[in-house]
Amino acid sequence: MLSGALADAVSAHDYWIQAAPYVSSKPTLVNITLQVGDNFDGSPQSTSPNWHRDFSFIHDGERRVINATNGPDPAAFLPADKPGLYIVGYENYADYIEMKAEKWNRYLEDEGLQSIVRLREAKQQSDLPGREYYQRCAKSLVLIGDQPVSLKALQQPFGYRLEIIPLSDPYTARNLQVQLLYDGKPQAGLLVAAFRREAPLRRQHVRTDADGLATISLRERGEWLVKTVHMVSVRDDERADWSSYWATLTFLR
Image (cartoon, rainbow, N blue to C red; front, side):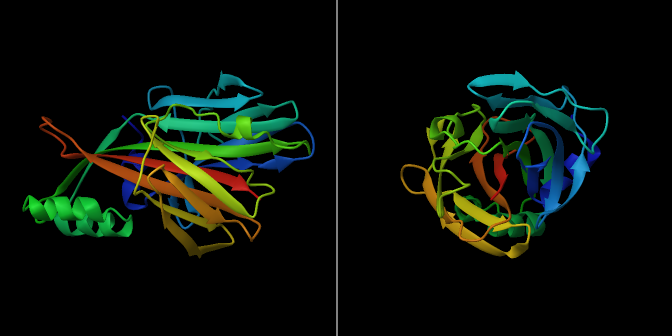
């Protein structure tokens, strides 16, 4: 089971990795914090091997496990001791939540899950509580030094249930193209939101195309969060009717 703070956090929606620093001119020890909140205003979360399926980073083609601390701030340290791009990933075990119908329907609308709203209406379930398993799939980019970023390095997948893959360099490109993968395959029709800590209410929204692609404008600099959620029905389960997967990507431009 996850921590109590995480069990309450689905109503706050966002779960992201915050690195300090995201960018450094020289090798350093990076604080990694797992944040739950809204509008880039979060509270740090602790973790343990009992709560997550994966907590790791990729650097120079090698993937290594990240060991959690005993507390939430930071949740871990990233030993960024060599130049280059570090991709930090975190995927927890699914947890369960149940909401009253009105609150759950509103949450579906807020997250762009109108297809689920229509399915519930078609099944005459709109007045029933929402019973859901939910899982978090977060990634963050950390850049050490000033060497060019390899697109091959950026595009390495972690194999999470839902994953945001950057296809262009967020440090130099004016537009960031991302691909959304669900179980390793491109997922069409997902609503992607992107915003900066400096202006969290000024958001971009775009849906993925048939190839799971979406493009975000990066004309402004700052700390960016890109997010999406995908929900599927659950069959033959006495507890839940739905499973949702929440993916985020953070970086400093």
